[in-house]
Length: 419
Image (cartoon, rainbow, N blue to C red):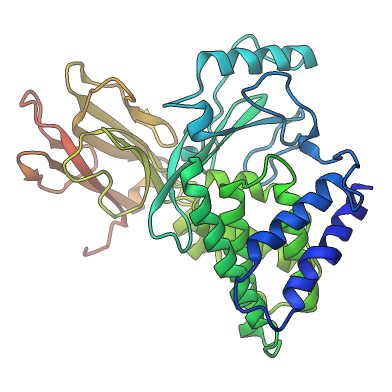
């Protein structure tokens, strides 16, 4: 029934808008989206009961179940995972409030699958994904938006952007879909196919973060995407867990998974490009999340300055290098508390919400291939500027000077590198 209703919503709303030559670009996009959502939720009669995955209310005003499932693209779980969704400015300030946490706990206990206390889950190949709210740079918006997901053993809390950011996301979605609409008359060359796939990935990423409606969001988006893929002679793909991945990762990672799913579904169409393992590693294994004072969590690329100039760097998720045969270890000197213990890559070094800045740091490598690489790093303090570049266990920064680090740079290099 639900699939038939999705088909009805496409036929009645999306396809006429897409095929209407008098509509230019994203004109009328929002009205089309509202019409499609209404049919999917209430049927053509407008009186049917919604049958989507988000239909089961928790019974408290702080959230609802979005979808059960196993997180193939993020982590493997033995049991069904429940997702609770919240709009950032409606329910949250800095983190999951105690009342929300208690409501979730009561609901999960009623299912018989909740631990005594929530256990935070760190994602193996994307350690930054356990953060509660991150500042993601969404395509075409030109700014970072607070959004994200917090992962636990038995559930995930999805955190969607502030209400004031949603109109800009819808406008960006209309712009992308308008380009897709105008692209439809072009020849189905490999180059054009890959451009369509790129535009669809942008559209999916924007829609997952925007979460315009309280239900049926991803059904609408993937229904539209699969229809367009069909128009370009390609098989559609399952919903998979791309919506969860979108909340947990930068756009480049989502696009690569999206392309991979399409290519696997269309094995006879090898022209769909996905990044090679070496290129993909740039995004998958070299993304670092840092926590800065007055800003919160922000993502950075390996080698770029990590942190916000003029703000205290208070903590970072250390990167991992699983394909290199090396393990990173680091320890920091924190204001007021001194040196930490050595922490392994994939874990959080420092603090959040304690106003304790990192003042200095040491890093080293271990593992069977560690003799082939060196780890180099330097700090930038608020008053003294950049330190000398340190490597392989040396200390960079200051001790006892009350001079916090604002930025950090890290490089992993082969031992024969001249950089």
